[in-house]
Length: 167
Image 1 (cartoon, rainbow, N blue to C red):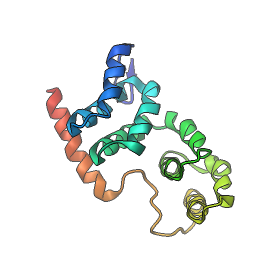
Image 2 (cartoon, helix red, strand yellow):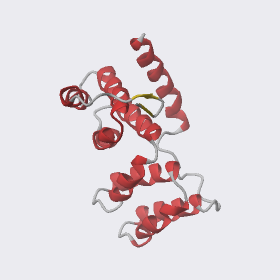
Image 3 (spheres, rainbow, N blue to C red):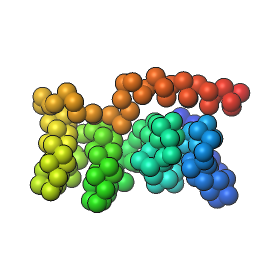
């Protein structure tokens, strides 16, 4: 069965667990390549990839996990909506970036809760994300994608190295 343009991995809990453990490796390539491999597990991989995207030990692991989640796409939306209710401001911010990238106006009712948040920065993020989704003018400093243009080039090189390893 194909998923996200690649073959879906057969259920193998040991392999999956090893890949999740590798996300926390001190070896940046092992962690990044583990994120790429987890894409084959589809929705099962969302939670560990989110954790790596937010709290990964290094930028390359965070970047790879984020890129994989972006490719997984729509299944990530419900999880990100749930993150808007978390205490962590970082989790909320990452959730908003994913929601802006992956969804449309249908998530605005969920984002509206940020408009009354106790932290001014979260109120700003909520307001700017709603403007973005409504296609209204928004602050150019607002990041509407989990991967910035500068990070995209770094990720493309990392992805090339991963694909070379597969050959």
